Length: 220
Image 1: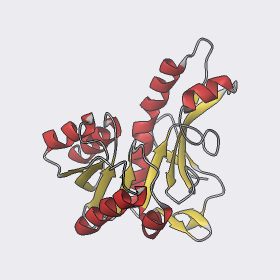
Image 2 (image 1 turned 45 degrees about the vertical axis):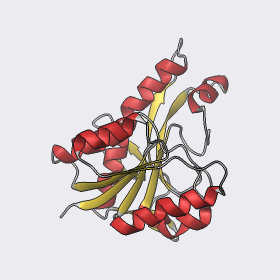
Image 3 (image 1 turned 180 degrees about the vertical axis):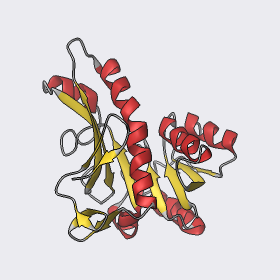
Image 4 (image 1 turned 135 degrees about the vertical axis):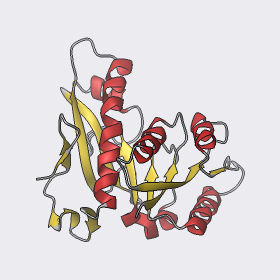
């Protein structure tokens, strides 16, 4: 039985496409039941339309309270009842009171090795900080920006001559399998959020799972 998944995205939609491709290939037992965006003209909306996946896309009213948009968004999500919400490049901070009821069923992928470099411009900040290692993290979403329990990470070295573009490209190549494997672990019931943290096969993780060279999660 496939897991009902809704995706929140604001940009190109490469993560959304990667999930859709994995589902079509039978590698992920999920059904993408909706794409939700705060940018109706974003390329990810075109991708969803091309795949025949229902789209909810609405630009926030800058004159209205920010929470109004969040409430409309989650009212639309409530209508389709996803088992899992995946934030995949959703460039909006959601009001904590709105998202909290979904925390254990909502994940985000972030382009850094959290807790380092929360927020924006992570590749530039990794270079400016002289980091020798960079990467991406998948975490459960909480009211704290990029501060929810980390599920899994993928690491890439920072090499001599790297700039934002080259580093971002190498990280993105690892983000797609990282997100797919994290979603797979959740749909299988192997990765779950509990009061004591993220559990893998019933055991509380002392550190996030790591994506290995064969695109598998290693959970210690």
